[in-house]
Image (cartoon, rainbow, N blue to C red; front, side):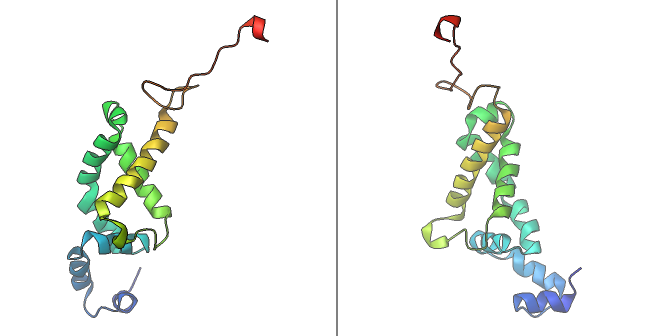
Amino acid sequence: MIEEGDATRRRGIEGTDKEIRREVWGLSNGRLLELFLGGDAEAWEELPRRLHGRLVRVSQRVAPDLAAKALEEDVVQRGWELLLGMGPFAYDRRRGSVMRYLRYVLRSAANDVRAEHAEAGRLKYGAGAWEPRMLSVETM
């Protein structure tokens, strides 16, 4: 458990834990994402609370095939897992908005979920999906 003094020294903020939490809640999504990627415990709690509903809606648009199978929550959860594995400098606010960055993360997450839930012999759902070629006895 982090002591109050440790938490304030770590952030360079003076005040109680309640004041520190209020400070985290008042941050922009961009700064909160940077703290999340840097391993900040309060950001790990606040960012999913703040953005989860929006990310579910984005995942429905990014992967309508998975939303049709009620897998949009899986996409979002995989997105959080991917974010946890990234380093503190993975997001650069100069390159775009937080939601645009998270949309790209959700696209990668959707590909992972598709791979997990694909039928045997198929790489993806829908038209144009790869299927294994069946060899006849004559071609062998």
